[in-house]
Image: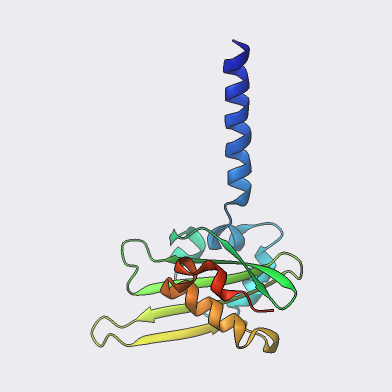
Length: 148
């Protein structure tokens, strides 16, 4: 009986710890401490509703830009990843958020990139990480996108 209770307690603890680490673009858009940064990032841009509601997403990864750690994550339109994708960089330390939204015209196959709140300090390395998150390069080479 004691072993069963211990196993259940360990499972509950592991599940809640995993949920805390499961940062998504949707959770950033809705989060009490992150919503303002998300709104600042998308200010002046009209993104589709799935971005906030939740798309098909990849788990967040940590990258280093300068002396700061950032969480980077991406998501795509459910059942249509080829036409709409978004990637976001989030810094818990500085409370900054920046992103990249991509749409692909199905008729011409032309991709349009919309940069969201990219400041001068993140201009090159931040854009590189965001684009890598959209293309899958970040997921395939997670240690290749740390810029100090």
